[in-house]
Image 1 (cartoon, helix red, strand yellow):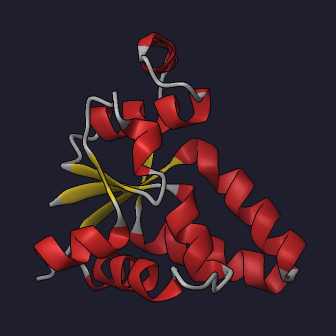
Image 2 (cartoon, helix red, strand yellow):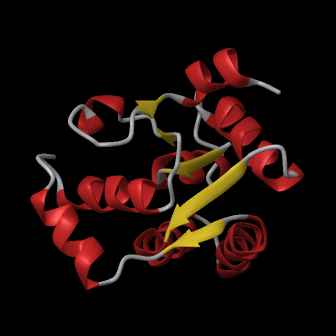
Length: 137
């Protein structure tokens, strides 16, 4: 199964944000183990690096990049994909871009802690805890 993982889930892991760290880390571990195909939206990589470095260190940020780049597909949008993101009826453009990546990569779900932000997404959103309770392999 392919899933698109929102940056908030990755930040939970790399910044050890409680109480979300455990469930988010389990999702990332499933991707790293190859039991789940994970997609990271390309536009989130720079934000991930910036925030991990800001709240940690440069080696922390580089380790996060190595882990994501080593285990996740990177979901890029071309001009048509960005136009599709603009047409989606999501209140936040960044969330619309995540939804467009999920659609383009034929993801079954967007794993996020902001499920409500994706109410009108063409790909359903699910919390890490709910995903694990329904689809733990």
